[in-house]
Image 1 (tube, helix red, strand yellow):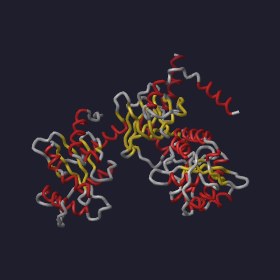
Image 2: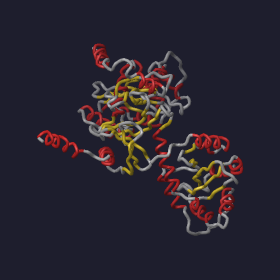
Image 3: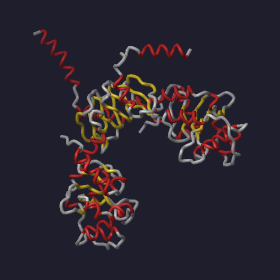
Image 4: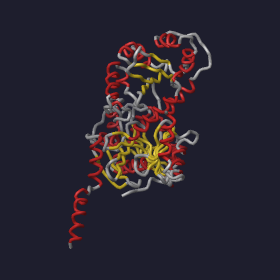
Length: 248
Length: 244
């Protein structure tokens, strides 16, 4: 199902003559020479191509002369082109992250599903997890992905201890409640998890990404009720522009 | 004749919709941020875009008014961040409003470069910077101090005024920077005005060093006489282009 769709979208892109975008692609690549450009395409911004590199959208003029980094807004639709592209990227990257590479907390019949990048040493991550039952009762399933920040020395090690425990959820519950875990080792996917976060520009925890790729503002995420309302609004197709991180 | 009339009918409605760059930019910005004030608009070096100044921030508006770019534009052909260059230009214009009579200048006999340094008597790095004055001067750098006493240093504004009102400002400044009591002299002084100008330029920390072309020098560079002279030499070779 997915592959024919992908093939069709590739075909749709094909008419952008080979070579027409080479200069733009090379210009974007220069932003981070060792990274792969994702989502390269002609931008809605006239005269520009765009691609995601280093976790952010970069625009390049067709001739490759001008590189734009920042927010591009469409005043006609009142949306951010940049946020739209990033949301697509988040959906793609999280879609490609195997479900087994998450620590899931789900109610019996979840109405909503969120990916939350978490760090075992981050105070707000602990505060969020302290209320996990409230989220579950509101029908929100939370899939945690470990994203230990470099400022929290030892957080990566502790994440491995959680992941390598026989009962991961129990281990996570206790470490988030301030308890110590015995050190453990195993084959773990921490690097893959962190790569996913970096690819979509996650730079803080907790960061929550909805099924449509939107990122929820911390104030919304930290309140189960506000989060549920925002998810319900998103579900109804409402534009919750104020929840997007790009809003000023 | 009929053809001419037809032409008039085709052209007139088009003229009716023609908006000046100012109108286009203001309308676009208002659609996104109604409270934001557009201070100036000009055609950008980026083809297809207008450049609008909102406060000290430079944003780009597509000529049709539909798209707003809030970020940095890099011109690969000249290897320059042209957004930063536009902002530097704005800073240079603002700097010129602070004349020599509003500065405390420490210059060598034949200065090669001049740098404006926003300073605060109670800021530790400002003191450390001043400790190296002989070396800056020796390298041909004239340091032109402008007062920016920060709110986090209560009383620093009074000290700045006392220094300004001393008979020998340079001597009083150097004494104050080594911890001497400034006294409480009072007189007409430019401290409030220069602080306002600095904030309007987006300068909120001290010491902040700005080259004559408006380029902001990073603290790491400014705090080292050798790095600073090298950077000022580089800027003198390749200044932010002056603009209309």
